[in-house]
Image: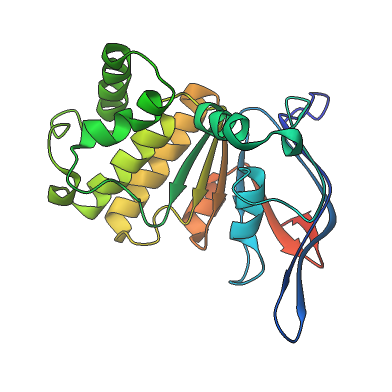
Length: 229
């Protein structure tokens, strides 16, 4: 990591709290965090400290209570509605513990969805989807409905869908939490390879020590700050 670079993503003085009837839960308190192009980061720590919330804030799925988030110098919190949705679709790929694939649709139809949402030409989107399915080892399964695929295959489809638009950032929240050890290790290796091949930034929330150790940097949340491990 070259700290002389301009950060790809800059989190500046960000605060985020959750309120219950009886208390305030502080997740972030004037937190700063610089994320650079092409690096890989594991967000680790105990359940309930706000790891997923941090990931959602980075990915603009959730808004902080205060502070700024910059992507290539542009203030993301100034984006509204459709502009923000278009930014997410083009620049950020998401993979979750639950793959959220569309049941009743084939693997390739699921992978094509981000390109179709972006109004790209169907032939071009189909070609990109086939290429990505081939890269994740599913070129022979592209026409299968997702419910006919194994859990490991479904997560690979989800990964292909997240990457089909060639995003600058891949955010993964417990991406192998529902997979057995063999499938988990396979997906770990694949994400690591794609991070290097595509030059994309990879940020993973995980309790899996093996996956965390594959990342170049590890951070956690402590006293409202994002700190190295």
